[in-house]
Length: 550
Image (cartoon, rainbow, N blue to C red; front, top):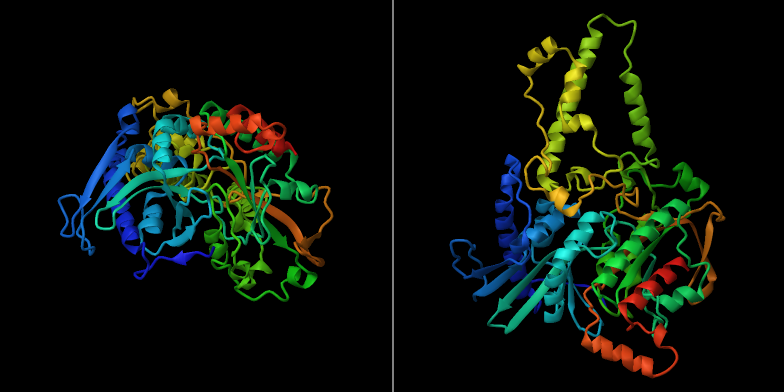
Protein backbone atom coordinates (compact mmCIF):
# COMPACT_ATOMS: atom_id res chain seq x y z
CA UNK A 1 0.00 0.00 0.00
CA UNK A 2 1.63 3.19 -1.13
CA UNK A 3 1.37 6.47 0.75
CA UNK A 4 -0.80 9.07 -0.92
CA UNK A 5 -0.49 12.80 -0.34
CA UNK A 6 -3.73 14.36 0.89
CA UNK A 7 -4.29 17.42 -1.30
CA UNK A 8 -7.36 19.44 -2.30
CA UNK A 9 -8.65 16.61 -4.52
CA UNK A 10 -8.46 13.98 -1.79
CA UNK A 11 -11.66 12.78 -0.13
CA UNK A 12 -10.13 13.27 3.33
CA UNK A 13 -8.84 16.79 2.62
CA UNK A 14 -11.70 18.43 4.53
CA UNK A 15 -11.02 16.28 7.58
CA UNK A 16 -7.28 17.01 7.42
CA UNK A 17 -8.02 20.74 7.33
CA UNK A 18 -10.27 20.37 10.38
CA UNK A 19 -7.57 18.37 12.18
CA UNK A 20 -4.94 20.98 11.40
CA UNK A 21 -7.07 23.94 12.52
CA UNK A 22 -8.26 22.17 15.66
CA UNK A 23 -4.80 21.07 16.79
CA UNK A 24 -3.25 24.45 16.03
CA UNK A 25 -5.88 26.30 18.07
CA UNK A 26 -6.02 23.88 20.97
CA UNK A 27 -2.24 23.46 21.38
CA UNK A 28 -1.77 27.22 21.06
CA UNK A 29 -4.21 27.88 23.89
CA UNK A 30 -2.59 25.19 26.02
CA UNK A 31 0.81 26.79 25.50
CA UNK A 32 -0.63 30.10 26.68
CA UNK A 33 -1.68 28.43 29.90
CA UNK A 34 1.84 27.12 30.35
CA UNK A 35 3.47 30.43 29.42
CA UNK A 36 3.82 31.32 33.08
CA UNK A 37 6.65 28.80 33.14
CA UNK A 38 8.93 31.65 32.07
CA UNK A 39 8.16 33.35 35.40
CA UNK A 40 9.14 30.24 37.38
CA UNK A 41 5.55 29.76 38.49
CA UNK A 42 5.38 26.07 37.78
CA UNK A 43 2.04 24.43 37.28
CA UNK A 44 1.98 20.69 37.74
CA UNK A 45 -0.72 18.18 36.92
CA UNK A 46 -3.59 17.08 39.11
CA UNK A 47 -6.41 14.59 38.63
CA UNK A 48 -8.62 17.19 36.96
CA UNK A 49 -5.94 17.92 34.32
CA UNK A 50 -5.65 14.22 33.47
CA UNK A 51 -9.38 13.96 32.84
CA UNK A 52 -9.96 17.42 31.35
CA UNK A 53 -11.63 17.90 27.97
CA UNK A 54 -11.55 21.11 25.92
CA UNK A 55 -14.29 21.64 23.31
CA UNK A 56 -14.18 24.04 20.35
CA UNK A 57 -16.71 25.02 17.71
CA UNK A 58 -15.17 26.20 14.43
CA UNK A 59 -17.58 28.34 12.46
CA UNK A 60 -16.64 29.56 8.98
CA UNK A 61 -16.63 33.18 10.20
CA UNK A 62 -14.73 32.33 13.36
CA UNK A 63 -15.52 32.93 17.04
CA UNK A 64 -13.81 34.62 19.96
CA UNK A 65 -11.41 31.71 20.43
CA UNK A 66 -11.39 30.05 17.01
CA UNK A 67 -10.12 31.54 13.74
CA UNK A 68 -12.19 31.81 10.54
CA UNK A 69 -11.63 29.13 7.93
CA UNK A 70 -12.43 28.43 4.29
CA UNK A 71 -14.52 25.34 4.91
CA UNK A 72 -18.18 25.95 4.15
CA UNK A 73 -19.48 24.04 7.17
CA UNK A 74 -19.12 24.26 10.93
CA UNK A 75 -17.21 21.50 12.67
CA UNK A 76 -16.48 20.64 16.30
CA UNK A 77 -13.15 19.73 17.82
CA UNK A 78 -12.37 18.12 21.16
CA UNK A 79 -8.97 17.97 22.90
CA UNK A 80 -8.56 15.28 25.55
CA UNK A 81 -6.28 16.01 28.54
CA UNK A 82 -4.49 18.91 26.79
CA UNK A 83 -2.21 19.81 29.69
CA UNK A 84 -1.23 16.19 30.36
CA UNK A 85 -0.25 15.62 26.73
CA UNK A 86 1.61 18.96 26.70
CA UNK A 87 3.79 17.63 29.51
CA UNK A 88 4.14 14.32 27.66
CA UNK A 89 5.52 16.21 24.66
CA UNK A 90 8.05 17.83 26.97
CA UNK A 91 8.81 14.45 28.48
CA UNK A 92 9.67 13.08 25.04
CA UNK A 93 11.78 16.08 24.02
CA UNK A 94 9.30 17.47 21.47
CA UNK A 95 9.69 21.15 20.71
CA UNK A 96 6.22 22.69 20.60
CA UNK A 97 6.98 25.06 17.73
CA UNK A 98 8.57 22.38 15.55
CA UNK A 99 5.71 20.04 16.41
CA UNK A 100 3.11 22.56 15.29
CA UNK A 101 5.08 23.32 12.14
CA UNK A 102 5.38 19.63 11.29
CA UNK A 103 1.84 18.51 12.11
CA UNK A 104 -0.13 21.71 11.52
CA UNK A 105 2.03 23.48 8.93
CA UNK A 106 -0.21 22.40 6.06
CA UNK A 107 -2.85 19.78 5.40
CA UNK A 108 -0.71 17.70 3.04
CA UNK A 109 -0.50 14.65 5.25
CA UNK A 110 0.64 11.33 3.88
CA UNK A 111 -2.15 8.78 4.04
CA UNK A 112 -1.54 5.14 4.71
CA UNK A 113 -4.43 2.76 5.25
CA UNK A 114 -3.45 -0.31 7.17
CA UNK A 115 -4.59 -3.77 6.19
CA UNK A 116 -5.27 -4.35 9.86
CA UNK A 117 -8.46 -5.97 11.00
CA UNK A 118 -9.48 -2.71 12.64
CA UNK A 119 -9.26 -0.85 9.31
CA UNK A 120 -7.98 2.32 10.95
CA UNK A 121 -6.32 5.08 8.93
CA UNK A 122 -2.77 6.32 9.38
CA UNK A 123 -1.62 9.80 8.47
CA UNK A 124 2.00 10.87 8.56
CA UNK A 125 3.33 14.37 8.81
CA UNK A 126 5.21 15.50 5.68
CA UNK A 127 8.58 15.04 7.40
CA UNK A 128 7.62 11.59 8.71
CA UNK A 129 8.44 12.40 12.34
CA UNK A 130 4.89 12.07 13.62
CA UNK A 131 1.96 9.82 12.88
CA UNK A 132 -1.76 10.49 13.22
CA UNK A 133 -3.82 7.35 13.74
CA UNK A 134 -7.58 7.11 13.98
CA UNK A 135 -8.92 5.31 17.04
CA UNK A 136 -11.93 3.25 17.98
CA UNK A 137 -14.13 4.34 20.87
CA UNK A 138 -12.83 1.44 22.95
CA UNK A 139 -9.20 2.47 22.37
CA UNK A 140 -9.99 6.09 23.21
CA UNK A 141 -11.68 5.20 26.49
CA UNK A 142 -8.91 2.76 27.42
CA UNK A 143 -6.15 5.32 26.78
CA UNK A 144 -7.92 7.90 28.94
CA UNK A 145 -8.30 5.33 31.70
CA UNK A 146 -4.63 4.34 31.75
CA UNK A 147 -3.28 7.84 31.02
CA UNK A 148 -2.22 8.56 34.66
CA UNK A 149 -0.37 5.24 34.81
CA UNK A 150 1.15 5.79 31.36
CA UNK A 151 2.33 9.25 32.39
CA UNK A 152 3.94 7.95 35.56
CA UNK A 153 5.68 5.05 33.83
CA UNK A 154 7.15 7.22 31.07
CA UNK A 155 8.21 9.89 33.59
CA UNK A 156 10.04 7.37 35.75
CA UNK A 157 11.57 5.56 32.74
CA UNK A 158 13.03 8.09 30.25
CA UNK A 159 14.40 5.20 28.16
CA UNK A 160 11.06 3.48 27.71
CA UNK A 161 10.45 1.80 24.36
CA UNK A 162 6.67 2.08 24.61
CA UNK A 163 4.90 4.10 21.92
CA UNK A 164 5.06 7.82 22.66
CA UNK A 165 1.62 9.43 22.57
CA UNK A 166 1.61 13.19 22.02
CA UNK A 167 -2.10 14.01 21.91
CA UNK A 168 -5.62 12.62 21.57
CA UNK A 169 -8.42 14.48 19.79
CA UNK A 170 -11.83 14.17 18.17
CA UNK A 171 -13.19 16.00 15.14
CA UNK A 172 -16.89 15.97 14.24
CA UNK A 173 -17.96 16.89 10.71
CA UNK A 174 -21.74 16.97 10.53
CA UNK A 175 -22.05 17.44 6.77
CA UNK A 176 -19.86 14.39 6.13
CA UNK A 177 -21.37 12.41 8.98
CA UNK A 178 -17.92 11.79 10.37
CA UNK A 179 -17.02 11.58 14.04
CA UNK A 180 -13.35 10.66 14.11
CA UNK A 181 -11.15 10.17 17.15
CA UNK A 182 -7.42 10.14 16.57
CA UNK A 183 -4.11 10.32 18.38
CA UNK A 184 -0.70 11.71 17.50
CA UNK A 185 2.47 9.78 18.29
CA UNK A 186 6.16 9.87 17.53
CA UNK A 187 7.47 7.68 14.75
CA UNK A 188 9.70 4.77 15.69
CA UNK A 189 11.74 5.46 12.55
CA UNK A 190 12.75 9.07 13.18
CA UNK A 191 15.89 8.78 11.06
CA UNK A 192 17.14 9.70 7.63
CA UNK A 193 18.69 6.25 7.19
CA UNK A 194 17.29 3.88 4.60
CA UNK A 195 15.61 0.92 6.30
CA UNK A 196 16.48 -2.30 4.52
CA UNK A 197 14.44 -4.63 6.73
CA UNK A 198 11.29 -4.25 8.83
CA UNK A 199 10.17 -6.66 11.55
CA UNK A 200 7.02 -6.90 13.65
CA UNK A 201 7.60 -9.48 16.38
CA UNK A 202 5.36 -10.56 19.25
CA UNK A 203 6.97 -13.76 20.49
CA UNK A 204 4.12 -15.98 19.25
CA UNK A 205 4.30 -18.43 16.37
CA UNK A 206 0.70 -19.13 15.27
CA UNK A 207 -0.04 -17.04 12.18
CA UNK A 208 3.23 -15.15 12.49
CA UNK A 209 4.51 -15.72 8.96
CA UNK A 210 4.84 -12.92 6.46
CA UNK A 211 3.06 -13.40 3.17
CA UNK A 212 5.13 -13.53 -0.03
CA UNK A 213 6.06 -10.03 -1.03
CA UNK A 214 5.37 -8.49 2.38
CA UNK A 215 7.96 -5.93 3.43
CA UNK A 216 7.32 -6.42 7.15
CA UNK A 217 8.63 -9.76 8.39
CA UNK A 218 7.32 -11.53 11.47
CA UNK A 219 8.37 -13.89 14.22
CA UNK A 220 8.70 -17.12 12.27
CA UNK A 221 10.67 -15.34 9.55
CA UNK A 222 13.19 -14.29 12.18
CA UNK A 223 13.35 -17.79 13.69
CA UNK A 224 13.97 -19.44 10.33
CA UNK A 225 16.95 -17.22 9.55
CA UNK A 226 18.66 -17.41 12.95
CA UNK A 227 21.48 -16.87 13.81
CA UNK A 228 22.08 -14.64 10.78
CA UNK A 229 19.00 -12.54 11.54
CA UNK A 230 19.83 -12.05 15.23
CA UNK A 231 19.93 -8.46 16.41
CA UNK A 232 23.46 -8.50 17.81
CA UNK A 233 24.17 -5.71 20.31
CA UNK A 234 27.06 -4.92 22.61
CA UNK A 235 26.80 -6.79 25.94
CA UNK A 236 26.36 -3.67 28.09
CA UNK A 237 23.79 -2.20 25.73
CA UNK A 238 21.93 -5.48 25.48
CA UNK A 239 21.80 -5.74 29.27
CA UNK A 240 20.42 -2.21 29.67
CA UNK A 241 17.99 -2.71 26.80
CA UNK A 242 16.69 -5.96 28.28
CA UNK A 243 16.19 -4.28 31.66
CA UNK A 244 14.10 -1.60 29.99
CA UNK A 245 12.07 -4.15 28.03
CA UNK A 246 11.38 -6.00 31.30
CA UNK A 247 10.23 -2.77 32.97
CA UNK A 248 7.96 -1.96 30.03
CA UNK A 249 6.44 -5.44 29.89
CA UNK A 250 5.88 -5.42 33.65
CA UNK A 251 3.88 -2.21 33.27
CA UNK A 252 1.93 -3.66 30.34
CA UNK A 253 1.26 -6.77 32.41
CA UNK A 254 -0.05 -4.64 35.30
CA UNK A 255 -2.34 -2.76 32.90
CA UNK A 256 -3.72 -6.08 31.54
CA UNK A 257 -2.48 -5.23 28.05
CA UNK A 258 -1.63 -7.87 25.47
CA UNK A 259 -1.14 -8.24 21.71
CA UNK A 260 1.59 -5.59 21.63
CA UNK A 261 4.64 -6.06 19.45
CA UNK A 262 8.19 -4.88 18.96
CA UNK A 263 8.63 -2.95 15.73
CA UNK A 264 12.22 -3.15 14.47
CA UNK A 265 13.81 -1.40 11.53
CA UNK A 266 17.25 -2.45 10.29
CA UNK A 267 19.62 -0.26 8.34
CA UNK A 268 22.50 -2.01 6.59
CA UNK A 269 25.56 0.23 6.61
CA UNK A 270 26.81 0.11 3.02
CA UNK A 271 30.25 -1.36 2.50
CA UNK A 272 32.83 1.24 1.54
CA UNK A 273 35.52 0.26 -0.91
CA UNK A 274 39.01 1.64 -0.58
CA UNK A 275 38.25 4.24 -3.20
CA UNK A 276 35.15 5.44 -1.38
CA UNK A 277 36.91 5.27 1.96
CA UNK A 278 39.62 7.59 0.68
CA UNK A 279 37.02 9.94 -0.76
CA UNK A 280 38.08 9.44 -4.36
CA UNK A 281 34.69 8.54 -5.76
CA UNK A 282 32.47 10.46 -3.35
CA UNK A 283 30.77 13.49 -4.81
CA UNK A 284 31.91 16.71 -3.21
CA UNK A 285 29.33 18.24 -0.91
CA UNK A 286 27.05 15.21 -1.15
CA UNK A 287 24.26 15.49 1.39
CA UNK A 288 21.59 13.01 2.32
CA UNK A 289 18.20 14.34 1.41
CA UNK A 290 14.94 12.83 2.64
CA UNK A 291 15.51 9.57 0.83
CA UNK A 292 14.13 7.61 3.71
CA UNK A 293 11.00 9.73 3.78
CA UNK A 294 9.18 7.41 1.41
CA UNK A 295 10.29 4.36 3.35
CA UNK A 296 9.54 5.93 6.69
CA UNK A 297 6.15 7.18 5.58
CA UNK A 298 5.22 3.83 4.14
CA UNK A 299 6.43 1.96 7.21
CA UNK A 300 3.59 1.66 9.72
CA UNK A 301 4.41 2.41 13.32
CA UNK A 302 1.18 1.04 14.68
CA UNK A 303 -1.43 -1.50 13.65
CA UNK A 304 -2.44 -5.07 14.27
CA UNK A 305 -1.27 -6.64 11.04
CA UNK A 306 1.06 -5.03 8.53
CA UNK A 307 0.73 -6.66 5.15
CA UNK A 308 2.38 -4.24 2.74
CA UNK A 309 2.28 -6.38 -0.36
CA UNK A 310 2.54 -3.43 -2.72
CA UNK A 311 5.39 -1.76 -0.87
CA UNK A 312 7.54 0.04 -3.42
CA UNK A 313 11.07 -0.43 -2.14
CA UNK A 314 12.59 1.14 -5.21
CA UNK A 315 11.37 4.56 -4.11
CA UNK A 316 13.81 4.62 -1.22
CA UNK A 317 16.69 3.58 -3.51
CA UNK A 318 16.17 6.52 -5.82
CA UNK A 319 19.17 8.46 -4.55
CA UNK A 320 22.82 7.63 -4.11
CA UNK A 321 22.74 7.96 -0.35
CA UNK A 322 21.91 4.25 -0.01
CA UNK A 323 25.38 3.56 -1.35
CA UNK A 324 27.12 6.65 -0.03
CA UNK A 325 25.77 6.42 3.50
CA UNK A 326 28.28 7.70 6.00
CA UNK A 327 28.22 8.29 9.73
CA UNK A 328 30.03 11.40 10.90
CA UNK A 329 30.17 13.44 14.09
CA UNK A 330 26.73 14.85 13.32
CA UNK A 331 25.19 11.39 13.69
CA UNK A 332 25.98 11.12 17.39
CA UNK A 333 24.96 12.96 20.51
CA UNK A 334 27.28 15.56 21.95
CA UNK A 335 29.91 13.90 24.11
CA UNK A 336 29.62 10.46 22.49
CA UNK A 337 32.83 8.48 22.09
CA UNK A 338 32.11 8.03 18.40
CA UNK A 339 32.00 11.77 18.00
CA UNK A 340 35.71 12.21 17.37
CA UNK A 341 35.48 15.74 16.10
CA UNK A 342 33.76 17.02 19.21
CA UNK A 343 36.22 15.20 21.44
CA UNK A 344 39.13 16.73 19.57
CA UNK A 345 37.52 20.11 19.85
CA UNK A 346 37.01 19.67 23.59
CA UNK A 347 40.63 18.57 23.90
CA UNK A 348 41.74 21.67 22.04
CA UNK A 349 39.55 23.84 24.25
CA UNK A 350 41.04 22.27 27.34
CA UNK A 351 44.53 22.94 26.07
CA UNK A 352 43.66 26.50 25.19
CA UNK A 353 42.26 27.10 28.66
CA UNK A 354 45.58 26.25 30.33
CA UNK A 355 47.23 29.47 31.49
CA UNK A 356 50.37 30.45 29.62
CA UNK A 357 53.23 31.25 32.00
CA UNK A 358 54.81 33.51 29.41
CA UNK A 359 51.72 35.74 29.20
CA UNK A 360 51.31 39.00 31.03
CA UNK A 361 50.01 39.30 34.57
CA UNK A 362 46.57 40.36 33.33
CA UNK A 363 46.05 37.08 31.44
CA UNK A 364 44.56 35.14 34.44
CA UNK A 365 42.04 37.93 34.97
CA UNK A 366 41.09 37.77 31.29
CA UNK A 367 40.73 33.99 31.52
CA UNK A 368 38.47 34.30 34.53
CA UNK A 369 36.42 36.95 32.77
CA UNK A 370 36.11 34.75 29.68
CA UNK A 371 35.18 31.77 31.82
CA UNK A 372 32.52 33.79 33.59
CA UNK A 373 31.07 34.95 30.28
CA UNK A 374 30.95 31.34 29.06
CA UNK A 375 29.26 30.19 32.27
CA UNK A 376 26.76 33.01 31.95
CA UNK A 377 25.99 32.09 28.32
CA UNK A 378 25.59 28.43 29.26
CA UNK A 379 23.30 29.36 32.15
CA UNK A 380 21.12 31.46 29.84
CA UNK A 381 20.93 28.48 27.45
CA UNK A 382 19.99 26.14 30.29
CA UNK A 383 17.27 28.58 31.37
CA UNK A 384 15.83 28.49 27.83
CA UNK A 385 15.95 24.68 27.86
CA UNK A 386 14.18 24.69 31.22
CA UNK A 387 11.39 26.90 29.88
CA UNK A 388 10.86 24.48 26.98
CA UNK A 389 11.07 21.13 28.77
CA UNK A 390 10.50 21.64 32.50
CA UNK A 391 10.45 19.47 34.60
CA UNK A 392 12.34 17.17 32.19
CA UNK A 393 14.90 19.78 31.13
CA UNK A 394 17.83 17.91 32.68
CA UNK A 395 17.33 15.09 30.18
CA UNK A 396 17.43 17.14 26.96
CA UNK A 397 19.45 19.80 25.18
CA UNK A 398 18.02 22.79 23.37
CA UNK A 399 17.28 20.68 20.25
CA UNK A 400 15.31 18.10 22.21
CA UNK A 401 18.03 15.45 22.05
CA UNK A 402 19.01 13.37 25.06
CA UNK A 403 22.02 14.40 27.11
CA UNK A 404 24.86 11.95 27.55
CA UNK A 405 26.17 13.80 30.59
CA UNK A 406 24.30 15.54 33.43
CA UNK A 407 24.16 19.31 33.70
CA UNK A 408 27.10 20.88 35.45
CA UNK A 409 26.22 22.01 38.95
CA UNK A 410 27.77 25.39 38.18
CA UNK A 411 24.84 26.03 35.86
CA UNK A 412 22.27 25.15 38.51
CA UNK A 413 23.55 27.69 40.99
CA UNK A 414 25.99 30.56 40.75
CA UNK A 415 27.77 29.57 43.95
CA UNK A 416 30.66 28.03 42.04
CA UNK A 417 30.83 31.06 39.82
CA UNK A 418 31.39 33.25 42.83
CA UNK A 419 34.51 31.23 43.67
CA UNK A 420 36.04 31.86 40.27
CA UNK A 421 36.59 35.54 40.87
CA UNK A 422 37.11 37.78 43.85
CA UNK A 423 34.37 39.77 45.45
CA UNK A 424 35.65 43.07 44.12
CA UNK A 425 36.01 41.72 40.60
CA UNK A 426 32.53 40.18 40.79
CA UNK A 427 30.99 43.47 41.83
CA UNK A 428 32.66 45.23 38.92
CA UNK A 429 31.58 42.54 36.47
CA UNK A 430 27.95 42.53 37.65
CA UNK A 431 27.69 46.15 36.64
CA UNK A 432 28.22 45.05 33.04
CA UNK A 433 26.77 41.52 32.97
CA UNK A 434 23.39 40.65 34.45
CA UNK A 435 23.37 38.07 37.25
CA UNK A 436 23.18 34.41 36.35
CA UNK A 437 19.63 33.12 35.98
CA UNK A 438 18.86 30.35 38.42
CA UNK A 439 16.95 27.47 36.82
CA UNK A 440 14.10 26.56 39.12
CA UNK A 441 13.43 23.01 40.16
CA UNK A 442 10.13 21.45 41.09
CA UNK A 443 10.98 21.62 44.78
CA UNK A 444 11.85 25.31 44.80
CA UNK A 445 8.57 26.12 43.10
CA UNK A 446 6.60 24.29 45.74
CA UNK A 447 4.90 21.95 43.28
CA UNK A 448 6.57 18.77 44.48
CA UNK A 449 6.62 17.25 40.98
CA UNK A 450 9.89 15.39 41.47
CA UNK A 451 8.84 14.15 44.89
CA UNK A 452 5.38 13.15 43.72
CA UNK A 453 6.43 11.21 40.62
CA UNK A 454 9.99 10.39 41.67
CA UNK A 455 11.26 12.00 38.48
CA UNK A 456 14.88 11.13 37.67
CA UNK A 457 17.15 14.16 37.54
CA UNK A 458 19.27 12.41 34.90
CA UNK A 459 19.42 9.06 33.17
CA UNK A 460 21.84 8.14 30.43
CA UNK A 461 20.12 7.25 27.14
CA UNK A 462 20.35 3.75 25.73
CA UNK A 463 21.70 5.04 22.43
CA UNK A 464 24.42 7.61 21.78
CA UNK A 465 22.99 8.37 18.35
CA UNK A 466 20.76 11.32 17.55
CA UNK A 467 18.27 9.05 15.79
CA UNK A 468 18.19 6.67 18.81
CA UNK A 469 19.48 3.74 16.75
CA UNK A 470 21.47 0.85 18.24
CA UNK A 471 24.77 -0.05 16.60
CA UNK A 472 25.50 -3.69 15.86
CA UNK A 473 28.25 -5.38 17.87
CA UNK A 474 31.02 -6.22 15.38
CA UNK A 475 33.48 -7.73 17.85
CA UNK A 476 33.09 -11.34 16.70
CA UNK A 477 31.71 -10.57 13.24
CA UNK A 478 33.70 -10.72 10.02
CA UNK A 479 33.43 -7.42 8.18
CA UNK A 480 32.19 -6.85 5.53
CA UNK A 481 29.07 -8.87 6.26
CA UNK A 482 27.68 -10.87 3.36
CA UNK A 483 23.92 -10.58 2.92
CA UNK A 484 21.74 -12.48 0.48
CA UNK A 485 18.57 -11.04 -1.00
CA UNK A 486 15.31 -12.87 -0.22
CA UNK A 487 14.31 -14.93 -3.23
CA UNK A 488 17.68 -14.36 -4.91
CA UNK A 489 20.35 -16.31 -2.97
CA UNK A 490 22.85 -15.86 -5.80
CA UNK A 491 22.92 -12.07 -5.19
CA UNK A 492 25.23 -11.11 -2.34
CA UNK A 493 25.46 -7.63 -0.85
CA UNK A 494 28.16 -6.40 1.49
CA UNK A 495 27.65 -4.17 4.51
CA UNK A 496 29.89 -2.83 7.26
CA UNK A 497 27.38 -3.36 10.06
CA UNK A 498 23.78 -2.67 10.99
CA UNK A 499 21.79 -0.09 12.91
CA UNK A 500 18.62 -1.18 14.70
CA UNK A 501 15.59 1.00 15.52
CA UNK A 502 13.13 -0.44 18.04
CA UNK A 503 9.86 0.46 19.69
CA UNK A 504 6.94 -1.29 21.41
CA UNK A 505 3.63 -0.52 19.72
CA UNK A 506 -0.04 -1.60 19.81
CA UNK A 507 -0.41 -1.06 23.55
CA UNK A 508 -4.13 -0.23 23.53
CA UNK A 509 -5.46 -3.78 23.36
CA UNK A 510 -6.79 -4.69 26.77
CA UNK A 511 -7.42 -8.27 27.81
CA UNK A 512 -11.15 -7.68 27.90
CA UNK A 513 -14.07 -10.09 27.94
CA UNK A 514 -13.89 -10.73 24.20
CA UNK A 515 -10.19 -11.56 24.40
CA UNK A 516 -10.80 -13.75 27.44
CA UNK A 517 -13.36 -15.82 25.53
CA UNK A 518 -11.00 -16.06 22.55
CA UNK A 519 -8.13 -17.24 24.74
CA UNK A 520 -10.36 -19.79 26.48
CA UNK A 521 -11.68 -21.05 23.15
CA UNK A 522 -8.14 -21.57 21.86
CA UNK A 523 -7.20 -23.32 25.08
CA UNK A 524 -10.12 -25.71 24.72
CA UNK A 525 -8.89 -26.52 21.24
CA UNK A 526 -5.99 -28.50 22.65
CA UNK A 527 -2.30 -28.13 21.89
CA UNK A 528 -0.79 -24.98 20.45
CA UNK A 529 -2.85 -22.44 22.37
CA UNK A 530 0.27 -21.02 24.04
CA UNK A 531 1.70 -20.12 20.62
CA UNK A 532 -1.26 -17.90 19.73
CA UNK A 533 -1.17 -14.13 20.11
CA UNK A 534 -4.29 -14.04 22.28
CA UNK A 535 -3.15 -15.26 25.70
CA UNK A 536 -3.27 -13.87 29.23
CA UNK A 537 -1.07 -10.76 29.73
CA UNK A 538 1.15 -12.66 32.19
CA UNK A 539 1.90 -15.38 29.65
CA UNK A 540 2.22 -12.81 26.90
CA UNK A 541 4.84 -10.78 28.81
CA UNK A 542 6.90 -13.86 29.74
CA UNK A 543 6.86 -15.10 26.14
CA UNK A 544 7.81 -11.63 24.89
CA UNK A 545 10.91 -11.59 27.10
CA UNK A 546 11.87 -15.14 26.07
CA UNK A 547 11.74 -14.19 22.41
CA UNK A 548 13.90 -11.14 23.14
CA UNK A 549 16.50 -13.43 24.72
CA UNK A 550 16.48 -15.68 21.66
